[in-house]
Image 1: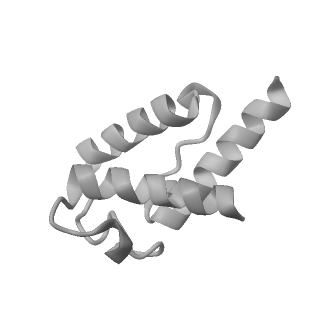
Image 2: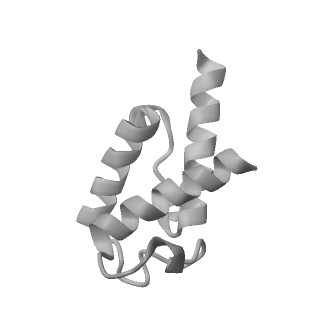
Image 3: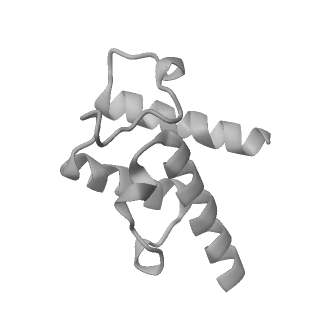
Length: 91
């Protein structure tokens, strides 16, 4: 699934650039708990959501913003997939 890999890589690159500047994107595990691990705090979570809105055209008014959706790269990727699928179905 190349699209999903590219999406996960873009998410990792954003997270590393914004929150872990000394860490190569390849070292960020897809399942590392970003919230419990202290990588993202509540303010950082708002920054991630704003980036997802801009990057993927997600309207956060139309989706459920469950904190569980932002615990890891894999969870964020699943959130994006679900939000973009829902948007496509509504169109």
